[in-house]
Image (cartoon, rainbow, N blue to C red; front, top):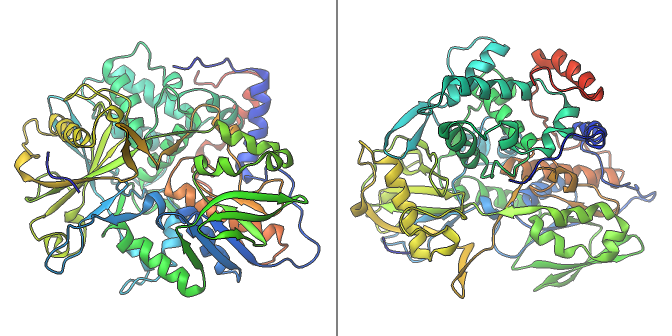
Length: 585
C-alpha cells in the first residue's frame, strides 16, 4: 500500500510443410507427447497436484467429482495469478481491506471452459452458480496521445447470419476507428485476417506458427498508425505479446475467436465479447471454488512447494515438498507455471521422455497490474480502457461502478470510492516521465509513470484523471525490488514463433506424471485462465485414461470454426501440400 505519488523469419521449407501437416493432426486431438501405459491391475486413486492456480483447482475439481483422493500443494495463495488479494492495513470501521490484484479479469465470450466450471460452483442466490457473477461490458475506451479518447461498442449489433461479408465487416469495424489509418492499409489488414480465416490447419501449423505477427501483417513500410496502433498496440493490449516475436498462429487464433464472439452469431459464444466479475475475484469466484472443493473432500496444503520428483522404475515414486517432506501418491500433476516446472525435470525424467526438454525453451515475460484508489469517481466510461501506443502498453478497468454494493461502504476507510485497475504489459520500453523502462524504475516511479501515461492518453479534452483524487495505490506484490533491481515472481508465458513445438501436452511418456498450466497445449493457445482451465481438464482426463477408468471425461470445447470457410480450407490444404501459397497471397 503506497501513498500517491526482429527475429529473422525462415522461409517455409518442406520440413516445415511436413511438420505443419503432423502438427495439424496433433492440434485437433491434442494427443500424448509420449506413450501412455494403462496398468493392468486396478490402480490407486490418490492424486498429488502441485500448484493451486486455475489449472490446479480445475484438475482437483474434475478428479474429486470422479471419486479420486486429491491433495493440492500450494506455496503461496490459491487462485494463482487469477486471484484478488486484500491490501493489508487499509480497512477501518468494520469494512474489508481494499481489494488488490495481479491484474484485472477479462472473460471474453469465446471462453467456454471457465464459464462451464463456474456454473458448477455454488454461490448463494445464484441459479447458475459463480457464472452468474459475470456481467457483460457494452463499451470500451481507446485513448491516443494528444487526441480525444474514443468510446466504442464492443459488439456488432443487428446481424442475422454469419457470412464472409459479416466477418469482414466485423473486423473492419473493430479496428477502423484508428486515427490516420489509410483506407488501403485497413483493407490490407482485413484481407490478411481473411487469409487466416481461410487457411488450412496444415498451413496454420506449418507456416503461421513459424512467422511473427509483424511479418504476416507486413508492418514494415506501412504507416505509423498501421504499425504502432493496429499491429503493435492492439496485440500488446489483447494478449500482452510482442508482435515482432509472437507466433502469428497464436495471435490469429485468439483474433478469430474474438471476432466471432463480436458477431454474436456463434451459439457457444453468447457471453459477448467482454465480461467481468461483479466483485473482486476471490469474492466472486476463487473463495467459493475453494470452499466447494474442500467440502467435496479436496485437501489443501498451504506453504508447500514441490522441489523435486523421484523417478524409479519408469514411474514417479515420490515428490519432495518444502514444509511437508516426501509426498507419495498414485498420480502426480505438475500444475505450476513453466518456469517452476522445469527445475523438477531431472535428467532421469528427461531420459524417459526427451520431449519434455522442450519446456526449457519456452519464454516468459512481464504483465503486471497496479490499482489506483480514488476518493472521487472518475467520469471514465464503464468498461475496459486501452491506451493505444502508450510506451508501457497500458490497459485499465474502472471497477467500482460494475461491482455490487457501495464500494466506499464495503472497502477501505470509507473515503475511497473508485478502484482503477491498470495492467502494464511492456516493462522494457522507456516511459515519458523518467525516460526509464518499468524494470529500471523504483516502485514509486512505476506508479507515477503509469499515472502520467494514463493522463497523457486519456485526458485530452476530458480531464478524467485528477492527481488530487488519488488516495493510494497498490502494485502486485509479485514484483519486488532486490538490491535495486526489479524482480517478478509471476511472469506470463509468451507464445513466440515456433514455441508450439516445445509445449507439452498433459500426457507424457511417464505413466503417472501429468502437466497442467497455461504452457500446456490447448485449443485457446494462449496464456489465459481459459487455457489453464482446459489444461486442468485434459490432465484429469489423462489420469482417467492411464487408470483405465470408465468415468465420464471432462468436456473439452474446441474453438468454433465457421463452416462457411471449410471448402476454402480444404482447397488451401491441397495447395499447402503442393508447396503453393495461399490464394490470397
